[in-house]
Length: 107
Image 1 (tube, rainbow, N blue to C red):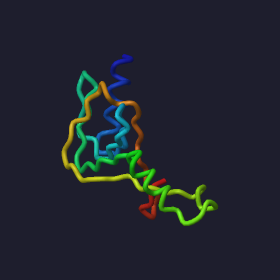
Image 2 (image 1 turned 45 degrees about the vertical axis):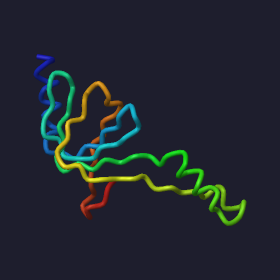
Image 3 (image 1 turned 90 degrees about the vertical axis):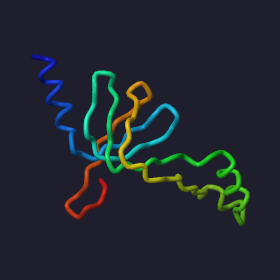
Image 4 (image 1 turned 90 degrees about the horizontal axis):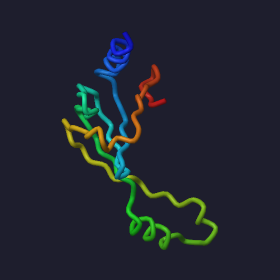
């Protein structure tokens, strides 16, 4: 019976927007389509996000106008649209369900 509950729990995520973090610090955001016994997850309409490189952070830090601005350093993540992807289960570190408010905003 425990396997049946686990399967129902996983099925509840089908069609939902997931945010999956991987061991190489990438983040994938897309609609869950399916999974398999190796914990691979297939996402549709997926965007990949990467944290900025050390060089990008250093360049942004060196471009600050004054020392008082050092606490407000912001560097955007890079992103690209991938479409349909398989995220290998062995590299998944975190799975989150992205929920939206009634106004369509990410909560």
